Structure formats: C-alpha cells, structure tokens
Image (tube, rainbow, N blue to C red; front, side):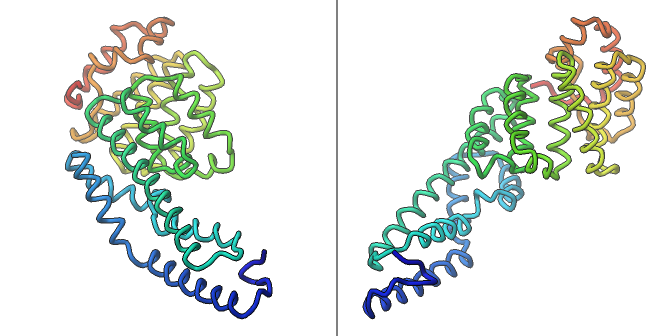
Length: 308
C-alpha cells in the first residue's frame, strides 16, 4: 500500500486512476469549501421542524460561526483527509462511494447535535432548565463541543438555573481534565457562569470557593466594564462571595449597586431568590437571616423579572 505522495508502482492504469481520483477529490474539496447553500437550507429546515421561538434565529446566527461542529465543509474535508491516509488500490467508484457514506454519516451527527442544542436552548428560555440539561449534555459529550464557548455559555447557565451542583461538579471536572484547553477559554460569560457555580458550591466546599475566586478574576479581566449585564453579573458574584465569607455588610453594598443600573437589567425576585439552593445554604449556616437577605433584594424590585 502506498500514499498519495509516494505511490506504489502498480502500472500506468493504476496511476491514471489515482490521478483521476486526486482531481475528483480536489473538485469535491473546492465544492465543500465554497458552497454553503446546503448548510443554510438544512439549518432553516431543521429550525422550521423544531418550531423554535423567533429569537432562536438570531441565536443560530451567533453560534453558527462559533461551532466547529456546524462547519459542514470542514467536517467533510476532515473525513476525506482521513480516508486519503489509508489510500490503497480502491477504484475511483469505490472510493467515491466510501467518501459519500462517511460524509453523510457526519452530517447526520451534526443534525443530531444541532437538534439537541436547539432543544436545550428552547427549554431553558421557557424556564425548564432542568429538562434542558440532558440535551446540552449530549452536545457536551461530543469531542467537538467540549470546549466550545457557544455551547458552554447556555449549558452552564442552565445548570445554574437548575440548581444542579452535582452536574456542575462533574462538568467542571471534565473541563479541567484538559488544563490547556480550559485555560484557553476566552469568553467572559463562560468564566462568569463557572464563577457563579463554583462560589455557590463553595458554601460547602472551600476548594470550590477558591476556584470561584479565580474564575471571578478571569471574568472581571475579560468583561466589558461598561456593559450593564456584565456589571450585574459582577455585583451578584461578589454578593454571593461576600456571603460565603460571612461579610454581610459587604454583600449588601454589592447587591445595592444593581439599583444604579438601567431598568432593563433584570434579576430574580425575592420570591424566586429565596428558593435558590445557595440562599437556603446561607440561611442554614446562619450567615444571614431571611429578613436580612430580603432587605437586600427587595429595594431592587424595579429590576425584578417575571417569575417563571
């Protein structure tokens, strides 16, 4: 068996077939790289089938540029490259058939991935974060999605909203299993969501609290200081961190800063906040009384979002 660079001398006929194959593969590569019509049409059809909310169309455009898993041309070329490495004495027709089968398989996988991601986003948006987790987890279990920030942002957010600290611990542990890729994460929202989960878990676990401090530092280093939503997140993270440190007065100062932000910035109402697992742990450990926490949150009622 030979390679494309150093073909085995099998005669003029084999060399001719190989040359034809190389040209066909070059043409296929060019087509896959230049023609994104299939991608757009298939995504549009899938969106219609899922009957997602109107706002998902915008989200789709945002994440489509981020997900390597969604780059159909790149996926197909990767398949071709892998097949080339094992090139032998196949006929052109057999080789083309193999490529078609392999690429079709990859496209089916991509559609499944996109479906699961879509369902996760839709469920989270309708307040069903717990139900969204298996869909996001399916995507996270795929190698191409593991460190994709476009997936991690809604996945970590759903874990937080579901109050699932056990899932959070498992996911964070998986992310840290490749320290190089973990440290390479650039999205402030990924670090903000990580900080939120780690600080909350830190009520019971000092090691997690320390990790939360570091994630909060990365969030602050990457966040836009003029972005109201990022300021809201920063103030709330420090509020939780101060409560973990038994600094109730400091916590009050941080959460009160949200009152100076635009009214479009929304937070959970007190009725919702008091049901949080974090809040219950703070009360259970007698860091603050329910009345103290209520007095911190209630002045921000103009910022309350509708309870789901």
